Amino acid sequence: MESRKITFGGKNGLHARPISSLVALVKSLDSQIMISTSKKQVKASSAFALLSLGITCGTELEIVATGGEESQNADKVVEFFNSITE
Image (cartoon, rainbow, N blue to C red; front, side, top):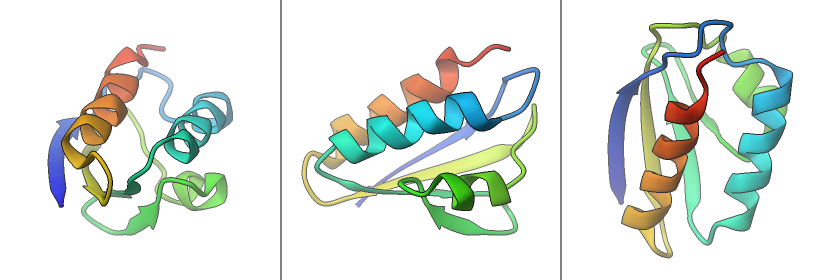
């Protein structure tokens, strides 16, 4: 299990378009990815679950990867989140 903590910096929050890209990324990886906030943890392969987190600019996230190339896959998800600026 690999875990990364980040602060989401997207000015418009995590909305449908980047969520669909995130789900596609996660489904291409050989690790199970979980995303959690202080209130809830969900599978990153579910767009509806990700929407339910209500991620806005400044939200603290924990990304957990299990199975497969955990470290590399956790880093890929962190890079994805860091690439969202709008």
